[in-house]
Length: 76
Image (cartoon, rainbow, N blue to C red; front, side, top):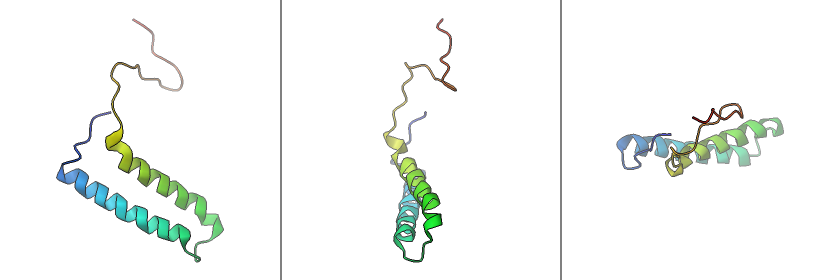
């Protein structure tokens, strides 16, 4: 995974948008008007927004092989 420049204008816009959406979504979850059947989708959206905001904290491990579908590539 490529590193994210947290000082860029792009990341500033993306993170500001995600924080705003996260607050709106949390408010929606806590609203009495929200139907119980809607809460799983709302919780999933919250989780996704949190993961987006955590992306800069992820570090690419180039020394570890990528594993796709649980199958490791052959050792050379």
